[in-house]
Amino acid sequence: MPAPLDIDQLQTFVAIVDTGSFTKAADKVFKTQSAVSMQMRRLEERIGKTLFIRDGRLNRLSEDGEKMLGYARRIIRLNNETITAFDEKHLEGSIRIGTPDDYADRYMPGIIARFAKSNPNVELYIECEPSGELAARLMRGELDVALVTHNPRARTSEVVRTEPLYWVTSMNHNVHEDAVVPLAVGRRCCNWRNLACTALDSAGRNYQVLFTSWSATVVASAVLSGLAVSMLPECAVRPGMRILSPADGFPALQPAQIGLMKRPGAPTALVNAICGHIAASLDNITPAGADTNVSGQGAAARREHRGRSDIAAVPAW
Image 1 (cartoon, helix red, strand yellow):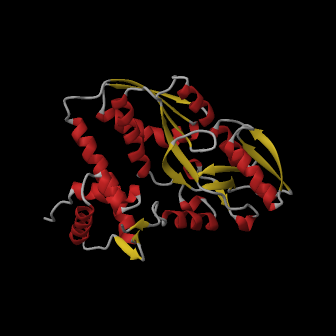
Image 2: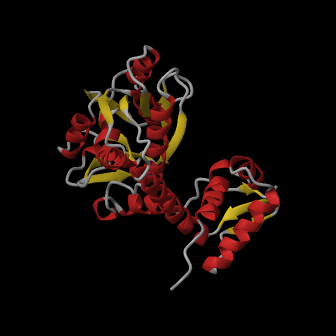
Image 3: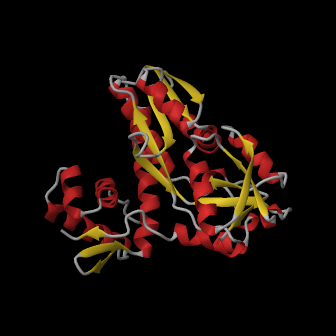
């Protein structure tokens, strides 16, 4: 029977990825840099694969390193959940969590189910509102944690996931070919709405905002009905939607970042537990839609994105 993987080595491996360097990882896991390097050599020997490729002064994740990263995060998360399940000092109390409805629809069912199973004495209050309102409510003390669209110009949040941001239309309609592109977007203060308008202006495309809503369900319905084009993060792309590319006249967009915000003064143990759980869960969620439901160019874009490391380069020092 093969010897089991060493959890400590996996935690160090993930720390290198998360911090971007061996030196910072050493500080995070309370080890010397030489100990960190030794752990990685032993982990590579254990699996018989090279996890990092030297590139000048940098180390890059190899393809096997990318593959190992997903497994490592899942093993660590399961290990932590197992320990928590048998911990006599279970967390207790209540915590108020806010999230936009598109994130709630895609992410929250699994996150809530796993957290509730490990922490049956914690009561979760989940509220869905736009990111801007969630940030304001958190500052007013009405929420403890908020999962928001990261927007450093408007608020401070810790990035826990990065996803492609896509132009989408209906698979069964050609509304994106209209001379004046009809749009379904959020309200005027929505960052993605402003991004969409700016991008279309730069591309010389005429457009008209026909549907305005904070609800991801309403926006998705307008797209699927063939009434409008919109921009959505990968998590919100649904079967029946087609991803548009520059070949369709829609410029490429910068990725969407998802961040966590914590209320100052909120119960530390509960907040740290749920935030750690959310961050670990988002690391292991795969794209919502299947490649069979997007255009060939969109599918290629997804595959390209999946092949990229969240840490493109890891300094060797």
